[in-house]
Image (tube, rainbow, N blue to C red; front, top):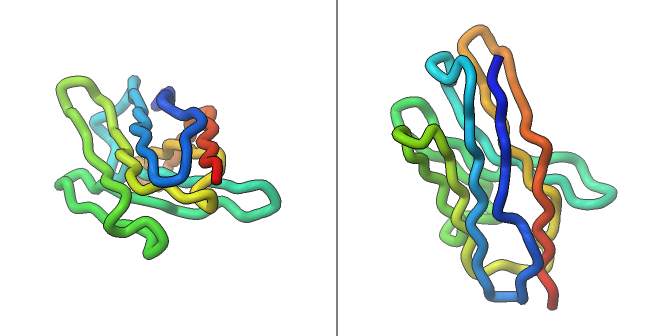
Length: 116
């Protein structure tokens, strides 16, 4: 079992920045990938950024150059630094952990709203 708690969402103007945090607890030694997803109203949930157990990262084309995923192993926390935010980044952002054996866990989500 892995528990994920997100924080850091909020309202920001276009061009602004936010940093999301995802604190993990439980069987974190089994985590292979930590991901950030987002879901905008009326749209499917989409993968935004991934950080692998060896710190390799990957990003959706829509956020490359603007978002950075990172982690602090001492705090068991993954971050998503979001810069140059656009109205189309407005969504509920979810933290996700993919464990060995393909078990997956989700956080409760945090709302990010970018005003134009």
